[in-house]
Image (cartoon, rainbow, N blue to C red; front, top):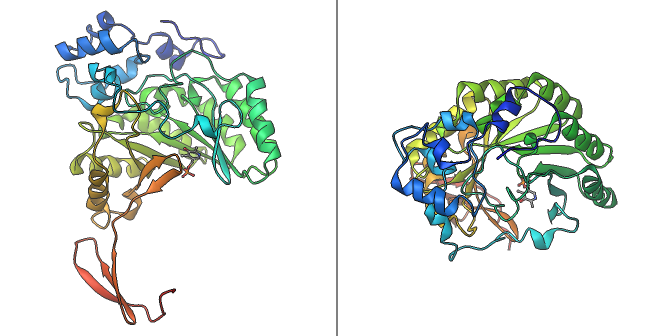
Length: 363
Ligand SMILES: *Cc1c(COP(=O)(O)O)cnc(C)c1O
């Protein structure tokens, strides 16, 4: 399946996109596929778009079907079990005043600038939109979003997401950034991407130089497992950081991929070593076709509790459950009781102590 990239001819990242693996026959040249994976590709691979960059394929353990990279990117027959989930559990479509733009919070919006991705995550929250057509937003469609932002002076933060905005070419992306930056009340721009993980070649010096002209710009990277922090990803993050772009990570809690303390701790440690600040740990959204990845909400709470205090504060993401109301943070309840001039608080080890707080509690 050929990918139509928005602009630019040859180059290493375009080669990666042009040589994506999209068939069982091709993939079985690189991996010893299990019967379950073969069945998954045949049954579910057409239901939600399936494609792998050669780079992300190279991260897969050729022998082990339990490999966390394989689990995230190879279709599974479990995706056909759409009963337990919903198409749009976060009610994004209902909160979309202009096509492609979601306005759920008072001061910020997201714009889904493309339905394309370099590789398609099997746990994708936007599988209703992503991977349907190899098409990015046109300048005209984007301008309709920018008009909405112009009319809403309360919007100070614009997040470009998708799909993956970095699958588009530099010129297209720069056009979007120029338009959004021309709105005086937009203070910060953010980009959400998985390119450093699945297509690190995309983070070229030219891209970084261009992005650096649109500051303040922040980038959040979707990273789920320590295996994703490769030398290539590290170099890509370094280039972005040197362009003055603060990096954060968004990790989705996935059963069988990262739902254990050791994996998550190693991930968070490795992220800060490559100067990526763990931002959010997401409860997996209950999107139809993803139920094999779900964990109980309590598990996420346990996992963040296993980090907080036990390691550097910078390594600890906020655990959030996304919802029609927006993201809801869950944190351990550490305020145990008020006792006169003090509060009884629970520390990270589980012990409690009285902390002096001689101010009356609000009525
Ligand atoms: C996640 C999200 C944002 C950004 O949320 P932050 O907590 O500011 O990172 C904005 N709008 C929508 C619709 C979102 O889903």
